Amino acid sequence: MIVTEIIQSVLGLLVTFSILITVHELGHYWVARFFGVHVLRFSVGFGRPIYRKVFGQEDLAEGLGDNEPQVEPTEFVVSSIPLGGYVKFLDEREQNVPPFFLEQCYNRKNVWQRIAIAAAGPLANFVLAIFCYWLLFVTGITGVSPVLGKIDSESLAWKSGLREGQKIVEVDYRRTFSWSDVNVRLLERLGETGEIEFTVLEKNSTLESVYSVPISDWLSSSDEPNPAVELGLSLDMPEYTPKIGGMLADGRAKSYGLEIGDEIKMIDGNSISSWKEFVKIVQLNPENELILELERSGVRKSLSIRPEARDRNGKRIGFIGASPEPMEFPESRLVLIKYSVFKSLEKAIEKTWDVIWFTLDAFKKMLEGVISTKNLSGPITIAQVANSSAESGILSFISFIALLSVSLGVVNLLPIPMLDGGHLLYYFIEVVMGKPLPERVQAYAAQVGIFMLLGIMTIAIYNDISRL
Image (cartoon, rainbow, N blue to C red; front, side):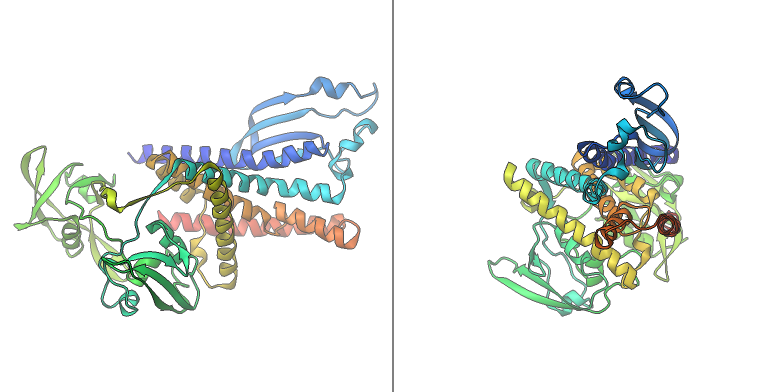
């Protein structure tokens, strides 16, 4: 089971990265070709090539004399390390170029053309995100109406006046159609001080009210922030039945003989009517034996289980590695977000811009130390999320592709040498100074850029491993 999950996650990572990298590099390629730059290699991945295809070899030979240096045709390559890609252009600073091809050299293009070529990769990622969101809005996205469930009487939400049964229609005066929208709006306020404004539709009423929840350096030190839970908010949900829907391969539930489909009827002689009751008893009994009475395929059975002891926020709780059977919301609680073809394009552009802004704001807050760098994720987390989103359905996977495509575009626009944003920084300096930066300055900056990228990747991978 574990091997299968690893294989699925790796495949999910490969498919996801292949799509994003190919689109990104195609942006550079298409704009370069538009300006007449000859492309030597288009590579998806780094390292040793595992597949290559050459195009245009005959065309290149036509303009060359017998004794002139050769110009390689365009080579399309898939390489062994699928964590990036590149497009290599003809450049007379790197090789001898025959006079016939000088105008096709990258370095011969004016600075604004080079700016367009460098920016084209990230912009292609944004276009992909817009297309994905457009597809989702045209098809229709099903969400859960943000009606509040039980609220802890000691929580900030309760003290601010929020109550069970209210429907959140706006957060900070921005519309929230689903519970997912509420969580996104709350994530935008991480690390901030002030007030979160909730506009709610009162229970069994058409009256809208506004409640202000005060926050101060909100969740700035949290490694895995859950804003709704922190405020004391919960979604009004149908009660889960105490029926096993999933188990961890190395969890106590599986090792003690529980099976998917088992319905828990009693624990130590006490009746169980909901999954919540079951979880509460398990958590209260770390390493204590519990006698379960259950129903399996219509037959009553009895077995014992000893919940594993785990530490959660300094508290010792029991854990068996089981999840409930999937639950369906009634139709009355579901919302369908769907628009016409042209309205979907408008909404897709708006959504992409919101995600771009959110990503930039998150980076800014990390640099300021307002939110934890533990929120950075690397390839392991991406692989797991890609796998789970693919399992959830094609629309979930498309949504994940859109989100990751925006992230890739934004990251590549950061003014770090070795990234597209670093090249753009050089070119804008060239615009101001009227001449390119000296080669030695660019070479030194490239070394700094490599160091910075390695540092970021080290943090991200460390975070990935710590989450396993």
